[in-house]
Length: 404
Length: 209
Image 1: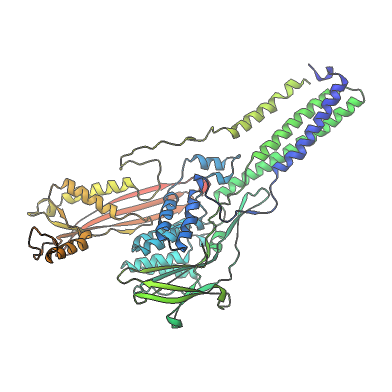
Image 2 (image 1 turned 180 degrees about the vertical axis):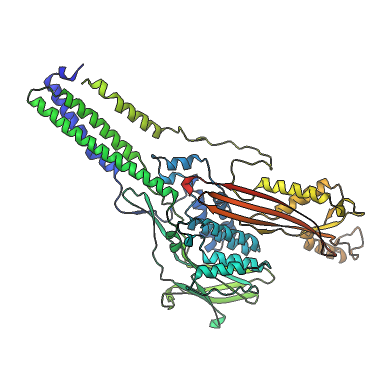
């Protein structure tokens, strides 16, 4: 049956239906294809989720365990995470899906950004050292530094001062020559601060962290750009005050995770997400044009119908353009260029370290955090008690400003 | 223009495009992969460029064969006593170092047919406590507990893992040198040394780069 053979009433109804379809498509589906204007941040303390987020949950739980003194629990979780972080993911269905047009990046297995992987290795290294395995600790520090390799700008590649310094200290403790690592650490520190020489006789290693780490946000028209927000912590440095003030151990910020997160440069995935965004925008624009054409053609058909002329060709064009427009909107809406903002959200901002010699036994003191001008942030000061073990094994202490 | 002729191409296109979104076509192993039993020296599908089980098996097998061939072991009048010292890890991979020496010891014990004996220094504290109990008469003794019978080492066996790593846009490369040595406890001479080297490289999925 040809459209021209339809009764006039039916043609009118069909014309109105086409207009309605086109308007609905234009109005309703446009909303699906657009992204939020504001960058969106992931929320803190997400509940345990699917298997692909296993590393993420293990890392968060490990940091909490470390801060609450559950070192065995932290080890189990970090080993679980590092078993995945240490491998190479190739020929992986989830990764392929994440690269495809119609699946979001966060459908892939979470391995984190380099600064997150580095922290998993740093924490595990601290625990290895605590267990009297400085060589395995050194392996972790090296792997951490290795994970920071490949930044777009060479000067930001493997540029953790603390990891380099600790690698050399572990080597020196193992009767090796840590001079090269110390030199590299000092070069990375530049003029910011003077790194102390290795005190191989030190029996207490103090790790400290303060401030909240960087936050991932999705920016860009479709949330396709991964960005980092750094809320600078007032705690610029710290110090451990022992023996009723007679001994003050400075704990300067060797590394800043905010700096590390924002100096990596782009990822390969950013290009893929960029292409997805272009595709989404192009299909959306094409759909807009088709729907606009459909409305015009439907109107034309309606006018011709009023004038008693045959509007069948225009109606057919309106239907075709309408279907194409709707199809384009559906495809655009189904395209998922959003950057993966899953994040290890209980990381610190600043990392510090000191090595001192203390007699075995109990020691009481206080941990103070200092602002930019070096004034004590008294509200943040906390009392600490240390137990220094006798024997050859180093006592490893871990202090965090973060509650969990 | 007839409507039926106009509609099918877009509809078919929509069906083709959207059909791809809804199915698991193109997803490898959507239902998972069942547990597979592998030989320890076999490379599995879960792999990295680090130190893995198959490397440890290959290296310790080779070292055990090599040690048994040296004259100090093969032609010794009495089985020499060997003490294992912890392996030093100088790579970027945290490893369970004991597993190397444990497997080396079990390989040597099973293949040496008594040509070499190992002293269990890990149990020294327990053994000393037991001896004290015997000396104090708190437990029975089948021999005079006052006679020193703890064996002294003729040789120390230890090893070291060294590594070199590279990471570029082209991928990740890791080289690990596994070296083991047998040192004469009396002279400090290294009477045997051997090494194995393994290099691996790979490039991970673009989604993770």
